[in-house]
Image (cartoon, one colour):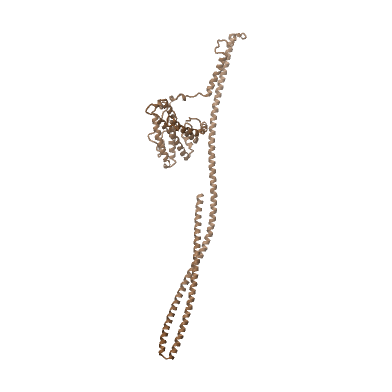
Length: 511
């Protein structure tokens, strides 16, 4: 796993490593086909590397060693509960991969023997030191994030988070306990012990009872691989500082008791002059060495200062890029919202125009409805008058029929009387018979005229009744048609009213 480096360098490492995610996945699948030996261990470790790369890519504010303060952890979520929710899920996934590697390593060991002192056992246990460090941080951050989420969201919404945390808590507690009993870890790392019971996230005050697990690496546990490496600039300086001496010794010799320059034979110089010249040369060489040392120190200081400045500028550049990306995302979001608001405004204007048109049509329909209602009232009144006239005519016809019946009965009685008188006339004299016969014939003619008049009157009344019935039928048909038309228009008006009400509700929802 990656060690603690500054954010710009970590981001550069991630940027260069993400290209090999597919290769890591292929290697993980390849090793996963081996069911014995180190196959499964290599497969799970490669999955862990990919998970770690994805986590740091999504959350660039996390350093490689996951060490963050509470303030930095709050800034990572940007005070958004959705970000904290998603970050908790990603930490659960990350911790799950760590625990899988932890558990797989322990399952591959024969715990009945002291495997932690063997080379094969230590080879398998060595990667777990970084796993223990990461698990302690992930557990601590998960607890704090869950308390923060429970203060913002309902408890039912976070039931899945609590269940998953409880499962990982039990696994991590067991693995920490088993690791602390291994001789290999006792001299390299001090493993913390988790509390007996998991935190109660439903009680906000339980956060004050939470103690962050701290993994301690003793000083004497440092291995030869962890010895501090000498800075390359210092090594270069020391090597270059020893260079003049070596060159001087190689050229002029390492002993001044000899006469490598053959001063005694040059220009007749004596021994004192040679000693003075040698001392002068030594002083000049010492001064040059001091100047060279000061120059190297100043160069090293400037190089380190420039490196620090470069790191600061890279950090600022990464932060500016992050802020620029946030601004672009926010700009896209605001642009989308503006387009949506414009569309809603246009829809609202269309709905307002449609509502105005519907109101105008409704007013016109209301006026037509009032006119039809008046016409319908008039037709109802005419129908009632015709019914009254029909009743009167029916009554007159009934009276006429009664009169006709009376006339027919009287005629029959007269005929009977005439027959009786005729019989009586046979017994009387012809004179009396003629007189009585003439009177009876006159009375018969009178009655016949009366009957004819009654028949004419009845025929006239029947004709009037037929006309009234025909007029009544026409009025009924007109009234039915008018009533159906009124009902259709009434239904149309009710439909328009419902449509208007729906548009008003829709306009209110848009607004």
